[in-house]
Length: 161
Image (cartoon, rainbow, N blue to C red; front, side, top):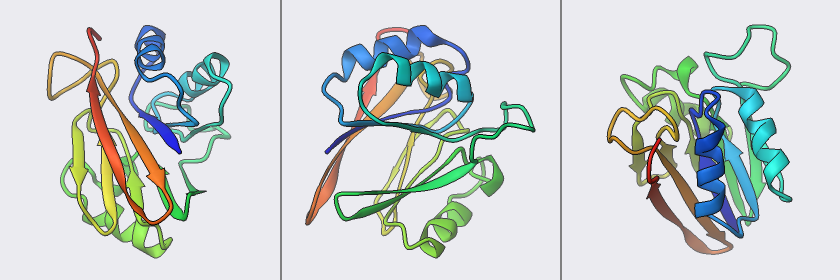
């Protein structure tokens, strides 16, 4: 199963359009927050499931979950924006949260910096599609999951942000 991972689009729908055009034939997309209407916009572009979470820039009364678990191809994926786990300073707390959920993959956003830590659990941050802090170009990831095979992760840098 091919999964697109995107985060921190912050209302820049052009960055979502570009990611979708660069990563066609995804079976699912995960949006790690900031902002929830962006995940809804992404869903309007693709005919596959989109799972999103709220972030620190979403309204306090949002009905969107701040974290969720997704089961795919014998993998348990914990997704969150990350702001509640101190991810700007350490991945320790997000790792503990993933482990407490028996997740073998944790994906977050918030820092706007690409991260790929080999686990267990595997810790991923696709960076920011619209406001990167680690490059002049926005980024997102694709993840290829198969039963019994280590996930294959690809970082994709966009043409512009």
